Every structure is written in C-alpha cells, then in structure tokens.
Length: 160
Image (cartoon, rainbow, N blue to C red; front, side):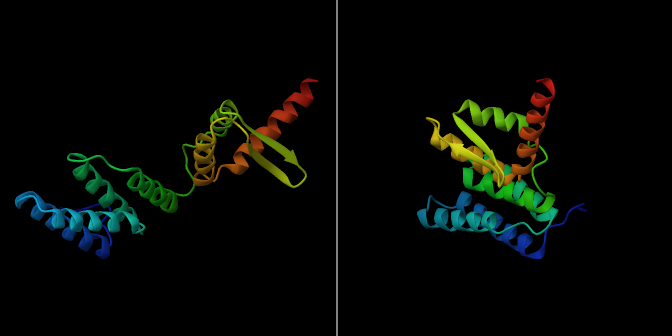
C-alpha cells in the first residue's frame, strides 16, 4: 500500500510492537501481565510527540482500532490535540467571540490595563474556567480575544 503520509520509522516500529501485543492479548487466555504490557506500549506511543503527519495518522488509526474495544481516555485525546497544534499551528477552530461568551457565562471576567488583558476566574465553576483557560492557551487565542475586546470598546465608543 502506498501511503500519502508515511510514519517515521520509530512510530512504525512502535505500531508493529503494539499490533503484536494486541494479538498476544486477544489470542491468549486472559493474562493481567499481557494487558499491562499492551497498555504501557499504547501509552508510550501516545506520549511520544508526532514528528510528522504520518505519525499523527498512525496514532489516529490506532485510536480507531482501540476504540472498537475500549473507551479512549482524555490523555490520549489531549496527545492528539497537542500533535495537531504542533504540526499545524494554533487551533483553526478557535472562535474568540464564542470563547469569551462561554468564559463570562461561567462567571469569568477580564480587566484591560496598560500592561494588557488579564482574565479573572471568580465564578462558581473554577474547574470549568480552568478548562477554558487551557483551551485558550492551547489555541494560542489570547491575542484574538484581546483584539475582540478592543474592537468592542471601539464600537461602543463610536456609538456613544
């Protein structure tokens, strides 16, 4: 098969090892040790940053295979998100207006000073606000939100 995005040799080798371990696990009597070995290899594969699109594609193929038999945990999805950001830059799907609306709806605030924009997490949902701040950081969206707030201030000043 001719792949458009071949994985790096290191990822290809890890995938072969994982495939063999999955077969060992499925074709042997239930063995706790085999499950632990398979799980460690899987986690190592997802912790290793993807160096190219082929590595990312291989991770997604493995997730699809594993997802048929088990629930994919948040750590693995986060690894995919980090790989995508590293390979493709900040999140293209980030919407500063939608993010700011969600932030303020959950009780978060902000203050604009001469030194820049600061976000205040004063709401009743600190966990949700923390996740939103992580989303902002992952998407590198701080400047986009600051620009949105500045534009709103200009529009309000023009309307007054």
